[in-house]
Length: 237
Image (spheres, rainbow, N blue to C red):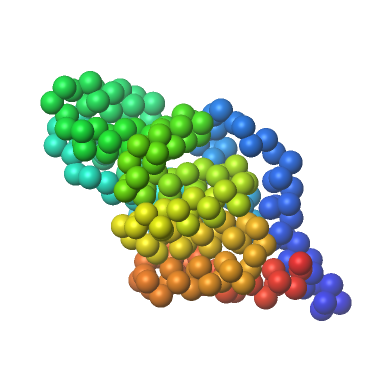
Protein backbone atom coordinates (compact mmCIF):
# COMPACT_ATOMS: atom_id res chain seq x y z
CA UNK A 1 0.00 0.00 0.00
CA UNK A 2 2.81 2.41 0.86
CA UNK A 3 4.50 1.68 -2.48
CA UNK A 4 1.25 2.22 -4.39
CA UNK A 5 0.63 5.48 -2.54
CA UNK A 6 4.12 6.68 -3.42
CA UNK A 7 3.52 6.03 -7.12
CA UNK A 8 0.15 7.73 -7.05
CA UNK A 9 1.76 10.83 -5.58
CA UNK A 10 4.39 10.73 -8.30
CA UNK A 11 1.69 10.60 -10.96
CA UNK A 12 0.12 13.73 -9.48
CA UNK A 13 3.31 15.58 -10.40
CA UNK A 14 4.08 13.85 -13.69
CA UNK A 15 0.69 13.50 -15.39
CA UNK A 16 0.17 17.25 -15.89
CA UNK A 17 3.39 17.32 -17.90
CA UNK A 18 2.48 14.26 -19.94
CA UNK A 19 -1.03 15.42 -20.74
CA UNK A 20 0.21 18.84 -21.70
CA UNK A 21 2.00 17.31 -24.71
CA UNK A 22 -1.33 17.04 -26.47
CA UNK A 23 -1.72 20.80 -26.59
CA UNK A 24 -0.73 22.78 -29.66
CA UNK A 25 2.62 24.52 -29.75
CA UNK A 26 1.56 27.17 -32.23
CA UNK A 27 -0.75 29.47 -30.31
CA UNK A 28 -0.68 32.93 -31.81
CA UNK A 29 -2.11 34.46 -28.67
CA UNK A 30 -2.79 33.41 -25.10
CA UNK A 31 -4.73 35.30 -22.50
CA UNK A 32 -2.99 36.13 -19.24
CA UNK A 33 -5.14 33.50 -17.52
CA UNK A 34 -4.16 30.95 -20.15
CA UNK A 35 -0.48 31.74 -19.66
CA UNK A 36 -0.86 31.20 -15.94
CA UNK A 37 -2.85 28.00 -16.51
CA UNK A 38 -0.27 26.62 -18.92
CA UNK A 39 2.58 27.57 -16.63
CA UNK A 40 0.84 25.91 -13.70
CA UNK A 41 0.60 22.74 -15.81
CA UNK A 42 4.38 22.54 -16.03
CA UNK A 43 4.22 19.60 -13.65
CA UNK A 44 5.89 20.53 -10.37
CA UNK A 45 7.15 23.85 -11.65
CA UNK A 46 4.75 26.14 -9.88
CA UNK A 47 5.26 27.66 -6.46
CA UNK A 48 3.24 29.48 -3.85
CA UNK A 49 3.18 33.22 -4.31
CA UNK A 50 2.30 35.63 -1.52
CA UNK A 51 1.18 39.10 -2.54
CA UNK A 52 1.69 42.33 -0.63
CA UNK A 53 -1.51 41.74 1.32
CA UNK A 54 -0.38 38.34 2.49
CA UNK A 55 -2.71 36.40 0.19
CA UNK A 56 -1.20 33.17 -1.08
CA UNK A 57 -1.67 31.89 -4.59
CA UNK A 58 -0.46 28.54 -5.89
CA UNK A 59 -0.47 29.68 -9.52
CA UNK A 60 2.98 30.24 -10.95
CA UNK A 61 3.91 33.86 -11.49
CA UNK A 62 3.65 35.33 -14.96
CA UNK A 63 6.40 33.64 -16.97
CA UNK A 64 8.12 36.85 -17.99
CA UNK A 65 8.44 37.73 -14.35
CA UNK A 66 10.41 34.70 -13.25
CA UNK A 67 12.78 37.61 -12.80
CA UNK A 68 12.30 41.27 -13.45
CA UNK A 69 14.54 41.82 -16.42
CA UNK A 70 16.75 44.87 -16.31
CA UNK A 71 18.27 46.15 -19.51
CA UNK A 72 20.11 49.27 -20.58
CA UNK A 73 18.90 52.43 -18.85
CA UNK A 74 16.82 54.53 -21.18
CA UNK A 75 16.81 58.31 -21.43
CA UNK A 76 13.52 59.46 -22.99
CA UNK A 77 10.36 59.79 -20.92
CA UNK A 78 8.36 57.40 -23.10
CA UNK A 79 11.18 54.87 -23.14
CA UNK A 80 11.41 54.97 -19.34
CA UNK A 81 7.65 54.46 -19.11
CA UNK A 82 7.89 51.51 -21.48
CA UNK A 83 10.63 50.03 -19.31
CA UNK A 84 8.56 50.51 -16.16
CA UNK A 85 5.48 48.93 -17.72
CA UNK A 86 7.54 45.90 -18.75
CA UNK A 87 8.25 45.17 -15.07
CA UNK A 88 4.59 45.19 -14.00
CA UNK A 89 2.96 41.88 -13.14
CA UNK A 90 -0.04 42.61 -15.37
CA UNK A 91 0.35 43.82 -18.92
CA UNK A 92 -2.10 46.14 -20.67
CA UNK A 93 -2.54 46.70 -24.39
CA UNK A 94 -2.39 50.48 -24.04
CA UNK A 95 1.19 50.29 -22.80
CA UNK A 96 2.37 49.24 -26.25
CA UNK A 97 1.47 52.70 -27.58
CA UNK A 98 3.85 54.28 -25.07
CA UNK A 99 6.65 52.05 -26.32
CA UNK A 100 5.73 52.91 -29.92
CA UNK A 101 5.97 56.61 -29.09
CA UNK A 102 9.45 56.05 -27.69
CA UNK A 103 10.55 54.10 -30.76
CA UNK A 104 9.21 56.87 -33.02
CA UNK A 105 11.41 59.44 -31.30
CA UNK A 106 14.28 60.26 -33.69
CA UNK A 107 16.42 61.28 -30.74
CA UNK A 108 16.30 57.81 -29.20
CA UNK A 109 19.79 56.34 -29.21
CA UNK A 110 20.48 53.01 -30.89
CA UNK A 111 21.18 51.38 -27.52
CA UNK A 112 17.98 52.72 -26.02
CA UNK A 113 16.04 51.57 -29.07
CA UNK A 114 17.21 48.02 -28.48
CA UNK A 115 16.19 48.28 -24.81
CA UNK A 116 12.76 49.68 -25.72
CA UNK A 117 12.12 47.02 -28.36
CA UNK A 118 13.00 44.43 -25.76
CA UNK A 119 10.69 45.97 -23.16
CA UNK A 120 7.87 46.20 -25.71
CA UNK A 121 8.32 42.51 -26.42
CA UNK A 122 8.09 41.79 -22.68
CA UNK A 123 4.73 43.57 -22.61
CA UNK A 124 3.53 41.53 -25.59
CA UNK A 125 4.70 38.44 -23.73
CA UNK A 126 2.63 39.50 -20.74
CA UNK A 127 -0.38 40.03 -23.00
CA UNK A 128 -0.06 36.48 -24.26
CA UNK A 129 1.19 37.40 -27.73
CA UNK A 130 3.83 34.72 -27.69
CA UNK A 131 4.57 34.63 -31.41
CA UNK A 132 4.96 38.40 -31.59
CA UNK A 133 7.23 38.52 -28.56
CA UNK A 134 9.27 35.54 -29.68
CA UNK A 135 9.86 37.08 -33.11
CA UNK A 136 11.31 40.22 -31.51
CA UNK A 137 13.44 38.27 -29.04
CA UNK A 138 14.73 36.16 -31.95
CA UNK A 139 15.67 39.22 -33.98
CA UNK A 140 17.29 41.01 -31.05
CA UNK A 141 19.33 37.93 -30.18
CA UNK A 142 20.48 37.59 -33.79
CA UNK A 143 21.31 41.27 -34.32
CA UNK A 144 23.01 41.76 -30.94
CA UNK A 145 25.35 38.83 -30.27
CA UNK A 146 26.31 40.18 -26.84
CA UNK A 147 22.71 40.56 -25.65
CA UNK A 148 21.80 37.51 -23.56
CA UNK A 149 18.41 38.58 -22.21
CA UNK A 150 16.38 37.74 -25.37
CA UNK A 151 17.63 34.16 -25.19
CA UNK A 152 16.50 33.88 -21.58
CA UNK A 153 13.04 35.06 -22.63
CA UNK A 154 13.00 32.57 -25.48
CA UNK A 155 13.75 29.86 -22.91
CA UNK A 156 10.60 30.87 -21.04
CA UNK A 157 8.46 30.92 -24.18
CA UNK A 158 9.72 27.50 -25.25
CA UNK A 159 8.84 26.14 -21.81
CA UNK A 160 5.31 27.53 -22.13
CA UNK A 161 5.04 25.65 -25.41
CA UNK A 162 6.26 22.48 -23.66
CA UNK A 163 9.36 22.42 -25.85
CA UNK A 164 11.69 21.69 -22.97
CA UNK A 165 14.61 20.71 -25.20
CA UNK A 166 14.56 24.10 -26.91
CA UNK A 167 14.08 25.82 -23.55
CA UNK A 168 17.22 24.17 -22.21
CA UNK A 169 19.17 25.15 -25.34
CA UNK A 170 18.11 28.79 -25.04
CA UNK A 171 19.01 28.87 -21.35
CA UNK A 172 22.46 27.45 -22.10
CA UNK A 173 22.93 29.93 -24.94
CA UNK A 174 21.99 32.81 -22.62
CA UNK A 175 24.59 31.61 -20.12
CA UNK A 176 27.19 31.31 -22.86
CA UNK A 177 26.56 34.94 -23.79
CA UNK A 178 27.27 36.04 -20.25
CA UNK A 179 23.81 36.55 -18.76
CA UNK A 180 24.10 39.43 -16.28
CA UNK A 181 22.90 37.28 -13.40
CA UNK A 182 23.96 33.72 -14.28
CA UNK A 183 21.82 32.12 -11.61
CA UNK A 184 18.81 33.06 -13.71
CA UNK A 185 20.06 30.95 -16.59
CA UNK A 186 20.75 27.99 -14.33
CA UNK A 187 17.26 28.21 -12.85
CA UNK A 188 15.72 28.35 -16.33
CA UNK A 189 17.88 25.39 -17.30
CA UNK A 190 16.75 23.45 -14.23
CA UNK A 191 13.10 23.95 -15.13
CA UNK A 192 13.70 22.86 -18.70
CA UNK A 193 15.60 19.74 -17.65
CA UNK A 194 12.93 18.91 -15.11
CA UNK A 195 10.39 19.08 -17.92
CA UNK A 196 12.48 16.52 -19.82
CA UNK A 197 12.50 14.24 -16.75
CA UNK A 198 16.29 14.58 -16.56
CA UNK A 199 16.12 14.92 -12.80
CA UNK A 200 19.83 14.46 -12.07
CA UNK A 201 20.81 17.24 -14.46
CA UNK A 202 17.96 19.40 -13.19
CA UNK A 203 19.18 18.92 -9.62
CA UNK A 204 22.64 20.10 -10.62
CA UNK A 205 21.22 23.19 -12.36
CA UNK A 206 19.03 24.08 -9.38
CA UNK A 207 21.97 23.52 -7.02
CA UNK A 208 24.18 25.80 -9.13
CA UNK A 209 21.53 28.51 -9.12
CA UNK A 210 21.12 28.18 -5.36
CA UNK A 211 24.88 28.30 -4.74
CA UNK A 212 25.03 31.54 -6.75
CA UNK A 213 22.01 33.21 -5.18
CA UNK A 214 20.91 31.48 -1.95
CA UNK A 215 18.95 34.55 -0.82
CA UNK A 216 16.93 34.92 -4.01
CA UNK A 217 13.35 33.88 -3.25
CA UNK A 218 12.60 32.35 -6.67
CA UNK A 219 15.82 30.35 -6.62
CA UNK A 220 15.36 29.18 -3.04
CA UNK A 221 11.72 28.14 -3.48
CA UNK A 222 12.41 26.18 -6.66
CA UNK A 223 15.49 24.58 -5.13
CA UNK A 224 13.61 23.53 -2.01
CA UNK A 225 10.55 22.40 -3.97
CA UNK A 226 12.57 20.24 -6.32
CA UNK A 227 14.60 18.63 -3.55
CA UNK A 228 11.39 17.84 -1.69
CA UNK A 229 9.73 16.08 -4.62
CA UNK A 230 12.77 14.63 -6.41
CA UNK A 231 12.66 11.23 -4.66
CA UNK A 232 8.99 10.89 -5.54
CA UNK A 233 9.55 11.95 -9.15
CA UNK A 234 12.40 9.49 -9.60
CA UNK A 235 10.38 6.68 -8.04
CA UNK A 236 7.50 7.35 -10.42
CA UNK A 237 9.57 7.16 -13.60
